[in-house]
Length: 164
Image 1 (tube, rainbow, N blue to C red):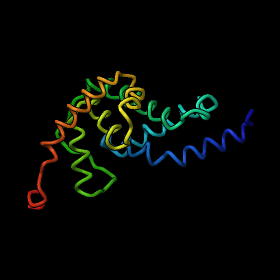
Image 2 (image 1 turned 90 degrees about the horizontal axis):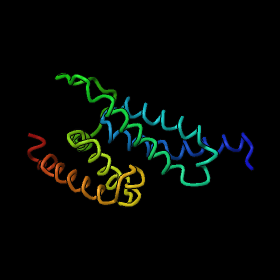
Image 3 (image 1 turned 30 degrees about the horizontal axis):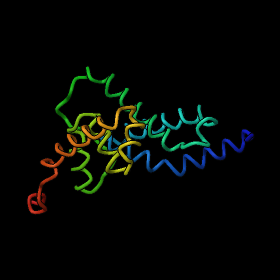
């Protein structure tokens, strides 16, 4: 049996090793730096609460599942929000290709976005994606296919058109 200090040290090691992966996943899902950081922070809190049970299994997979569930809860609860026409200020700057990708991802449905990001950015299998999102493999295939079909026309801009 592990001591509390050993558990805490293992948790800190997990946080250090998985922070960038979870933050990138959250950022691609939300398109906002502060929202992504909030999701990751809440994910780490929830993982810590269950750390003794998940540490010997696959804590990163558990963290992705928690993050996905938190994201789903947030978009479900915000469906009644009023959309605004003004663009909020962002604290992050990034290259145009990444910005275009994130903007295009935001045009997909939340479930399509989750499937595309998990399958093609985090390189999870269909089975792992289905387990993370608690949906069937067939649903993963369907959402991913629809998501990619939706992204193609949005990202089909040539370099010449981008810089004109």
